[in-house]
Length: 171
Image (cartoon, rainbow, N blue to C red):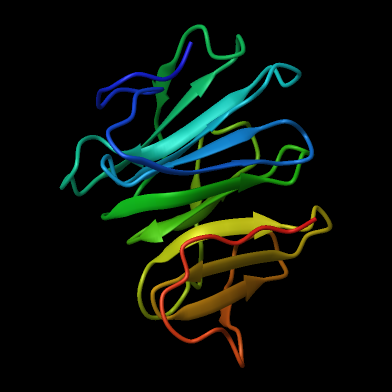
């Protein structure tokens, strides 16, 4: 179950955006808790949520559920300092999380995370998306970045939109 007021997994303080991908995963951007949470609906068995412990925390955290959201467990391996704002999956087992101080990927459903060897330069990415064919895009306060190696290295996109971008999606 998810929804309701709070700081824990599945709880929100200021939900600002909801997106659903082709696999039925629901992404909720919660500005009050400074995180994006992902929830499967109801076909996927494994769900991953990323974010900070509480607003203002400096260590990003990850949780996973292997029973369609009924129970959540914190998982190790999300390293670095800062906040994680965006998470996306390619539907084939690769997850990418991006934010202020941490950008990286998981290939085991969020159980372990590997930091990008070349993270996005400049300010924090706020949203990340993939076309499902190995190409990833992230947007944020100062532009856009792309990765063609599953989130390991990021390059600044040329001719990116000016100004503040909160979300990106592909079809």
